[in-house]
Length: 266
Image 1: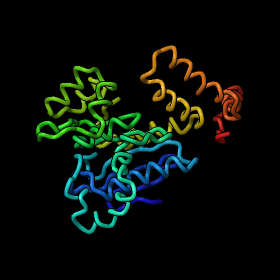
Image 2: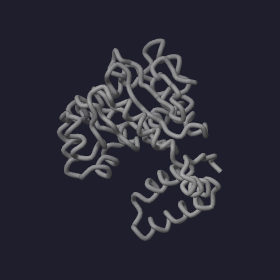
Image 3: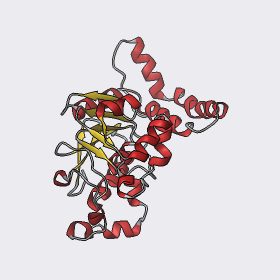
């Protein structure tokens, strides 16, 4: 199934669940964790039986950001993966979804701390659920650092600029309720229920036509920065071929016959 000592991989039906698993460090990003994340994204992309991915953290936290000591490989756990980073110096950015976008929908299930690099990874996910009591924020400026995981580019495109700049320039923490109010996350659920809710959403995604789902996701990102006329043209180019698939015909037939559709990615 894959994974590393800091990243576990499980299947829940058609959903691949990636769990950041360094609870003693609030799932701070180590080299084994980053390698496991990147391999997980690749596994989801390569396996057509996977229709969605849920990203979460173990021990009541999502991710507290980068562990610089662990990333440097100053210890056995890091040393085992140094060759992977040497072979692909971009691996950590791909793992954090800065330089890689999975073709399957990625649903974040957040509990506890989701700060610094955790909030940066969050911006690469598609649907976001948080338990009440979760904490968000980009703390880098408070430490004289720069949030180089993509936040100065992505955050103002995902939430209103005034909120993005306040988060980026103050480095203050945000509650789950405030994060939802400004649009950083989609919904807040009772503490401890984020994963269960994310899996419910994943099942709703999994019940849809996989070719249609992947085409819709691709279209949203491809057209995000295009002028409306160009975006609409790109949408047609991406969307019309879906209507010619066997899955599209099956969807219409299942609706007429009042039964669940059986999609075959064809």
